[in-house]
Image (cartoon, rainbow, N blue to C red; front, top):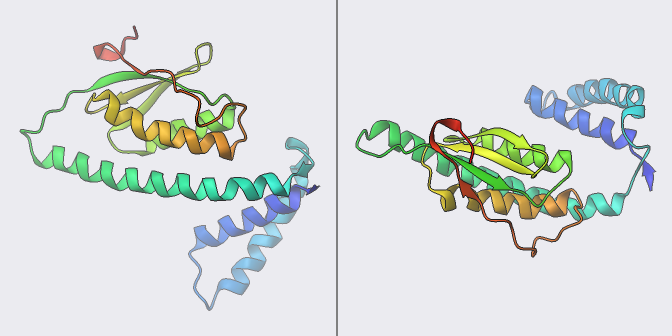
Length: 186
């Protein structure tokens, strides 16, 4: 176990480097700025998160986070091409639908990560999360339930490992339901 705020501070410094888009000539200065702002900020806000961090749990989560990111990027490119094709080809059917996707993950961080991934993918939008049934309501430009739910289940399998959920990726997922038109739920 180690203190968590230095790890958060380093993460903020790395995020700063990505935001700034550093070059080899500016990397040292921008790293100093990132650390100079990130570490004090993380220290000042340390009461808002746990004091310690299990480095072994973090090390176990990193490979799954990278896989999650790879699957997300693949879906992002695929969805962009599909939406562009639908825009450029007026004969391509647009059959929007709302799909209820019950989730196995329960932590707020895992649900939020999946919901944001859905919304960031063109052609889909997370409309609502029902906390009682742990169900996301997803609006899709083409209401093909299996095509919409498959990447969500893959993201969920990785999120189970990343966020150390109590369920297993091998547990059966609840079936998704196609909603009624116009945003009304079943």
